[in-house]
Image: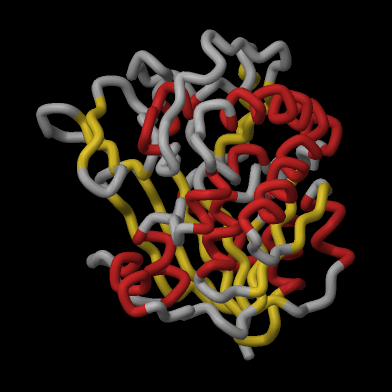
Length: 299
């Protein structure tokens, strides 16, 4: 476990969060009008449905709150947009992130949007072991695991905060797809927790992805952002991710792979399709682009 490197990464996220936010138009108004930043895929995993179908459209049309009565931990939560979207589905939500800048933005957005949620600034490796087993659901989503230096310790702590019968749900960009650099060249190691130094830090991926990551409306915002802080990432393969859950005593119930990337142009020459999904232009063979799971703490 590398808490020192986690803190280096915190600096990079503190720096980039205002740039990301600068591209998003009136997020509070978007939420007050019933908007969501979630995708159907993670909602299917949370509800145990799918994998196909426009579940969010059905929920919005019906006015249902399918997560009502459930305590949900979203960790890490970044600036809280997905956390508040989960609260809109009825969940009693807590969002945790290592970046105080991101959590301050999340708290402000929750207040302005009138959505009840709890937020905490913490390294998950410190916060999780101090919590009781009180959550029905834990969600980790979209680029969370590359910042985690020890999956065995992390997932053991996740299992520890779940109620008996509670579920751990995740959706991630696929470890195979994360082996490619921004040019589409096979560059990075696969699995084993290999340490990768990102000299250019966390970039402005919201600017690069455009409206797909700004459903409230895209603004040009800050132009030419360059992060002054390098990052430290950890490469985890599919076997690492699933094996650490089994080692923590969780029971795998669902594993899925996806031929598209939600919201983010993770490889060059990708085009946006309906539903804010990115796929390679012209089709053709590609590695799986996302990976999802649901596992349960035995009752």
